[in-house]
Amino acid sequence: MALPMARPQQQPQAAPIAVARPRLPAAETILPYLQRLDEARWYSNFGPLLTELEQRLSARFARPTQAITVANATQALSLALRAMDLAPGGYVALPAWTFVATAHAVIQAGLRPWFLDVDAATWMLDPARVEALAPNLNGEIVAAIPVCAFGAMPDLDAWIAFRERTGVPVLVDAAACFDTLSDARLPSVVSLHATKVLGLGEGGYLATEDAALAAGVRKLSTFGFEGSRESLIPATNAKLSEYAAAVGLAALDGWPGDRLRWMRTAQHLRIALIGLPEVTFQPGWGSDWVTSVCTVGLPRGAADQVAERLRRHGVDTRQWWGGGCHASRAFAGCRREALPVTEALAGSTLGLPFSIDMEDHEIARVAAALRDAL
Ligand SMILES: Cc1ncc(COP(=O)(O)O)c(C=O)c1O
Image (tube, rainbow, N blue to C red; front, side):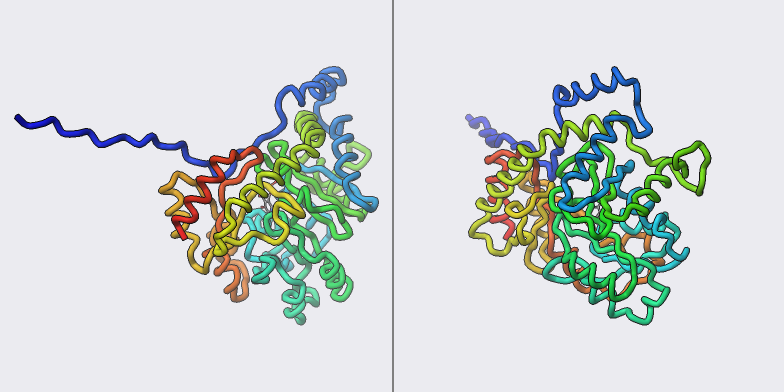
């Protein structure tokens, strides 16, 4: 008599590990602010909650600084460029190794992106590279935007010296630098998107020591109004509501504890990857500064293969900046120099799963999958 076929043993499938799991303030921590909002019946247009949020953001800087909130960082970048009164159609030097928002902001401001390559060690634009375009600095290049790589700060003193030497205005795209940015000698834009280390859904701010620039961005974000109902310049509406400010204030209340939690998770991940020298972290990541993503360096050209291998282990990954900003079709016509470092980074960096409350067993799975992949 034929024996019944043994059924293959079903392995329970572990749930996939998401590349990001944002966590904004819990409802009960926002409630006291919502109750203030109910009492004040002031829902937008620079009410008391937004004013308090901006004051608390400004107070994070060592020197007197204004934080001007805007609907998101893309708008903040664009309005800051517009407030700088640059020659229309001029080139803005920016790194190709950035998120598409940087280039969109340039175009929205009526300017043209000029994509430059980044430094292989810092993943950021070096002022010397912009200065090497010297003949074009005389009017053709009207501004430069260094972009902070995933939360790391560029050498601010070098950029300030660049601005002094060349007269070219500098705007820092510090979208992921809520934690890292505490010096606004150069105007800098931070994102408060839900995926950032301190999020309120959608939002961003310009931090600046330049009162005229702050006033200019404010005016552009609110129909060109400045102290009256007359619109003084063509502008837009890019304000944050009191509801967004309520979330932001609750997030700031929780920030000291949350910062420690981000750091602890980062340290666990670093420890789990000891013994995998092929995986490198950004200098200071999770020890000197925190950010919401974990973008690691891998052997040259290995990113796609590692991503596919991790996917088979149920470990989600993301190339946060794709093949580089310049590679998007939207920017096909934009000026660029040769971009070998950016292209190498696109093939040798990968965003691993990372979240504020990532559990030890998830970290262990990511480490095991990487060990298998490499
Ligand atoms: C480098 C960079 N610039 C700008 C932005 C845009 O930020 P937002 O989503 O607040 O517009 C992002 C968003 O992730 C970014 O990574």
